[in-house]
Length: 114
Image (cartoon, rainbow, N blue to C red):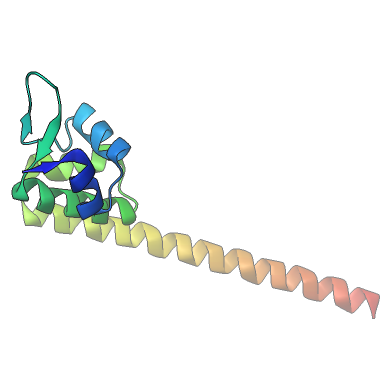
């Protein structure tokens, strides 16, 4: 069992994030001491924490992460990741169009000044 500070260091998640994940029932401690209310995490929590950290890095919302945790099927996760990938690709395309528009705008301004 790991104290919250040890678990935070082990997973790279802050103690505040772990407390928040516990509050929203996303990643609850394996054990809470009834006297001290100190939270403890186990090895099973470790793998869930790593998954949540990865999903957060992929831009998943708390609600999307809850959906993954509640469903527990790889097919559902794979579908969500595919959807997320498509949205990111669309954002990249939109940003590339914006860059092209800026380049064209700058180019037209230079041509008028020449």
